[in-house]
Length: 215
Image 1 (cartoon, rainbow, N blue to C red):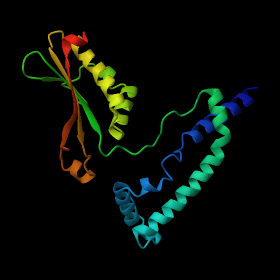
Image 2: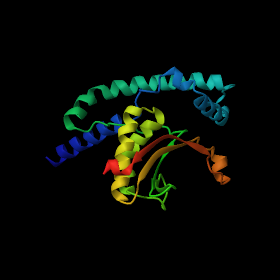
Image 3: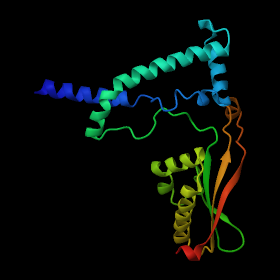
Image 4: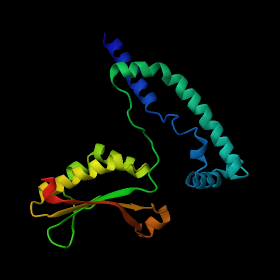
C-alpha cells in the first residue's frame, strides 16, 4: 500500500509540473514575436549564441521559432490527457507562470487632502507611504494592477479606484478629497539600473472623489 501511495503521489506531482510548463497562448503568435522589444531580445540572444553558427538574427529567429513550434506540439500532446485530471483534482494552473516582466508597469498612488494640498498616503513600493499596504500588496490586488497595465479598461479601473478612495476616506476622517492615479514609466535596461538611474514617467488616469460622499 505504501508503494502504491508513493507512486500515486509521484504521478500527481509530475502531472502538476507538466501543466505548469509555459503554455502556447502567446508563444506561437507571430505578432508577439515581431514586437520591437522581442526582436531586440532575439538580437541579443543571437549575438550570445553566435558560436552555434547563426549568421544573422533572422537565422536565429527561424531556428527559435522552429524550437517553439515543436515544444508547443509536444507540450500540448503530453498535457492534454492531464487537463481532465487537473479539473477533477482542482489543481489547474489559473495564471501564466514564467511570464515576461512588464516593460511599461504602472504604480498606484493615493492622495488625500484636508485643505488645498494633497498628501500621498500610498505609493506602490514605498515604505513611507504604505496606507493599507497589506491589502494593496496582496497578490490578487497586484494582479489586477498588472492587468490594467497591459490593457487599461475604465470598466475595471473606475469601480476599483472608487473602492480604493473609499478605503482612504474611511482611514482619514479629516480628509475632504481623495485622489487616485497611476504612474506609468518605461523600465530601464540593466546597465542603466546598475548606474543608479531612476525611471522617469508620468501620472495618468486621475480620479478625484469627495471624501464625504464615500463615507
